[in-house]
Image (cartoon, rainbow over all chains, first blue to last red; front, top):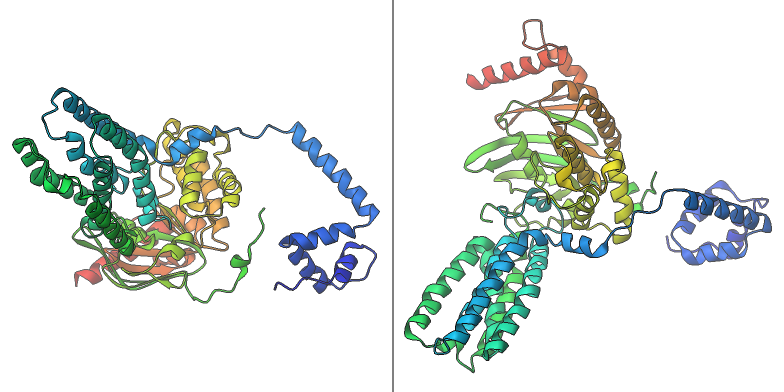
Length: 266
Length: 266
C-alpha cells in the first residue's frame, strides 16, 4: 500500500494527452490523496495548461472566500474554561478556598493552636474529586458515560483541574502561616490518590466521604482537643507520605477498568 | 460530502453490528431485560414496546452505559462484558439518551465539540464534523446560541447532532422525536433513512407511524423479551379488524402485543 507510483507514471497521470489505463489512474489518484511527497512530484510535472487552469480556480476560490461570510470568531479562553466543566467545580473549589482562608486567619489569631492548614490539607481536594466523576453532579453523565474517554481519563483530567486550584492555595496558606509546605502538599496528594484507589471499589463519592470523615474523626478532632499535631504530621514523616502517594497512585492506575462504566456507586 | 476513510471501506468480520444472546440487564433490582435474543445489521430498526417494556434499559446496555447482568452482548464484533476494554466499541457508538443533561452555558457548537473530543476524534477532523452534524439536524442558525436559550425540540436536535458527530457504526436514539414538530419529524425521518444506509440505527419510539415510515425493520419487546422482529410491511399484515388502533400498523402492533400477553399469561 505504501509503494509510491514511479515518477514516469505520475508524469503520465499529470499529462492529459498521455495514455494511462483506468485502473492505474485510480490507484495513483487514491495514493496522491494521502501522500504529500508524490503530490509535490505531481505539481512539478504539471503542464502549463494545468497551471493556468489552477491559477484561475485559485483566484475564483479566493474571490468566493472574500465575498462570503466571515469565519466565526470564537474566544478561545472561554472555550477552554467551558471544556473543563468549570462551572460545576467552581462552587466546591471556592468553598474549599474559603475554609482554608479561615484556617489561616485562625492560625494568625490563635498561634497556640495546632496548624489547621496542615490538618485540613489532606481533605481539601476531596469535595472537588468527589464531584468530578459522579452522576449526581454531572448533568451530562449519561452522554459522557458512553464515550471512549469516559472512565479514568475523565476522572484524572478533572482531578488535575481540582489540584491546579487547590495546590497553589495550600502552598500559599502553609508558607503564609510558616508550616512545612511538603507536609501540607504531600498528604493532600496522598489523600487524592487514596480517594481514586478506594473509589475503584466503592465509588469515588463514597470514598471521598469515607476518607474525609475518617481523617476528621481520627486526626483533626483529637489534635484540636489536645492542642498537639499528631505524629504523622510531625517533621520527618514527609518521606512516608511521598511513598504512600506513589503506591496509591500506582494501585489506582492498575484499577482503571473499574471506572469504565459510571456505576450506581458513583 | 466527505471523504470516505480506509477504515470505513474495510470488510467487516462480524455478521451483526449488534448481537445479543440471552441478554439480561437490571434496572435497579428489577430485571428489565430478560433473556433477550437480538441481531441487528445495517439499516434503521424501530424499537417498539409499551411503557416499562425495557426499551430504555436495553438502549443503555447497548450504549455500554450499564453492565449486562448475564448473557452475551457483541457490538461491532467486540464482546462487551464486565472486564472488556470498551474504547474501541465506544468510538463507533452514537447515543442519544431519553433524557440528557447538558451544560447550560455551552453553545450548541461547544457542546457538540466537547462530545466529539470525548469520543476521541482526531483533532483536525473535529471542527468540520461538528459543523456537518449541526447542519444535518438543521441547527445551523442556532450553532452559536447557548444551550439554555434553546427550545425542547432544539435541545433534542442538538442531542442528535452529538450522537452522529463521529459517524457512528451503531447509532442508538432513545425517543428522538419527542418535542419535534411535524415538519421536523419528517426531516428527522429522512435523516435516519440516510444514516441507516451504512450504519445500524436503533430508534426507540412510541409512535408506530414513525417506525412504518422510516424503518427497514421493526423490533418489538414487552417485559424485557423479544415479541417480534420483522419488516414494517409484515407488521401491517398482522392486524385484523378487531384489533385496537387507527391504522393498519397500529392494529398489527396491538395484535402482536395481545398475542404475546396471552401466551405469557398461560
